Length: 225
Ligand code: V0D
Image (cartoon, rainbow, N blue to C red; front, side, top):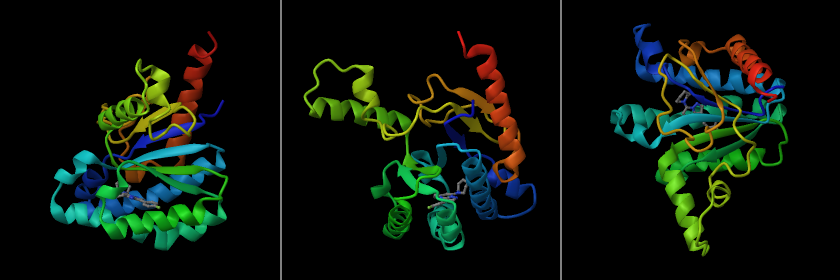
């Protein structure tokens, strides 16, 4: 079986650029081109949802010029690729605290979400200004505000930002680190975790197919108990 929902920590863009004597921002731009490639490939594989860690709550600590470039990337990306994503029936969604982003960046995402809201293909879900521990704490507080007195796992799960998406089958982290870095801690409780040395700009369609084949092997060996 194909995974229904894949999550990716798109790591290694800065290192990829540095290895080529380029600015980190060049790595982020190449990384954004790869978002297009992988989204189209995942869509062709009939994957239902792809959740990408695009900007964590911890990323604010990066140099100001880098953060400011990252906030401009959504517009650069959509000017180039929104039409093609529309033609491929891709639906753009976000999780995380959008209200903490610059107004212009929020407007770009709102536009992309509105344009693609009736598309029925791949859900391309961006985690922006997202942190998992905080998401869980907020889910607990929402349950309390709803008057729940004895909070269950279902009470929390139904209040996570991913409540409407299928369970995450496979999480991929590129560029060698083997950590979750506050990404989808609850949602990844039963997911397969795949780590590759490839930097995100080099993680192409064949790398995605390799990860999915690895996932399918795990399923065959451990799935049917
Ligand atoms: C930077 C590597 C595409 C990791 C990928 C700040 C971090 C490139 C988008 C994007 C980012 C795509 C569709 C859309 C809006 C944005 C993007 C960010 C960062 C957020 F509707 N790449 N990309 N957004 N990076």
